Structures are given as C-alpha cells and as structure tokens.
Length: 195
Image 1 (cartoon, rainbow, N blue to C red):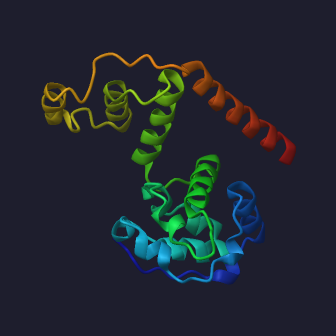
Image 2 (cartoon, rainbow, N blue to C red):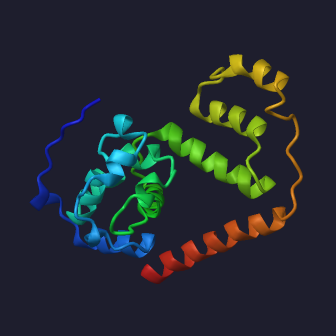
C-alpha cells in the first residue's frame, strides 16, 4: 500500500469543502490541533491510507479529492475511540460518517466492495429493523462478483445458531423505516435547496 503521497495544496485547495464538512458533521474542524490522540486510539490505522489526524488536517487544508477518495473513511469502524480521546471534544466519527455520505454523493469511492456492503447493510436495516445477515451476505457476494466468498463459514455459523434462515420480526420496524425515509427526504430537500 502506498503510504506516502505528495499533494500540491495550492492547486487543490477547496475552501467550500471545509465549510461543507463542518456543516454536515456538525463539528468544528478548525479546533483540531493535530495532537494525534485519534490516530493513536484507532485500531485500523495500520490499514488506512491516511491516519485519522491526517484526514482532519487534509480537511483543514481543503483537500476534497484526497479525503473523499481515501480508503480511511470507509475502513473506519465508528468505534468512537478517537472521539472519546479527543481533547477538543470533536466527534471524529461524525466527521467520518459525513465524509462517507459526501463520497457517495460525489461518486468518488475508493473501495467499491465497501460501498456495496454499506448500501446493502442499510437496506437490510431499513427493511427488517435490524440487519438480516443471512440475506445480506449472499447479496453482497452477488453484487461484488465473489459468489463463494466466506461460504465455508456457513455450516459453522448455522450449527452454532449464529445465523437464522428467516429475519427476526422486531418491534418498531416501521419506525426504523420511517427514520430512513425522513433522512432521505431531508437529503433531497437539502440538495434541492443548494440547487
């Protein structure tokens, strides 16, 4: 994996990007002074192309393309360890989520399989009120072209009763779907407002 890149900051500076990330995440990115606690707390830094503190710095520098096309924003597990240890009380996981939404909207996603998983996971939660793993995995495998991916695990997890053939019926399923509908409606209104 390439860990060192050279960016020509003057040519790629996008001031609007900084304001947009702050608006969509609800976080004041300028408060970050690069202490590095977020990166030190992150269990996935070893697979990121940019550690979390560098993502924050790239946002401050208006580097839209570098940030939205990074692997890091998609590999973030949203465990909130970075947010918990931030001395500036920046909820970094909200920033990462806003960046994923922006990346989807811009169509500049670096890891297509992660995008597929993200979409199907959310569809499953919207449909069933929680994720239905037995239905999710074959759809993700089909959409990514890896039909037999992790198939060897199926007998073990069924035997251990970790997966079920049918989705669970949960209370509040319609309310969960309504949350998704409200969010999608809000997104459409927001985009129409920006015109």
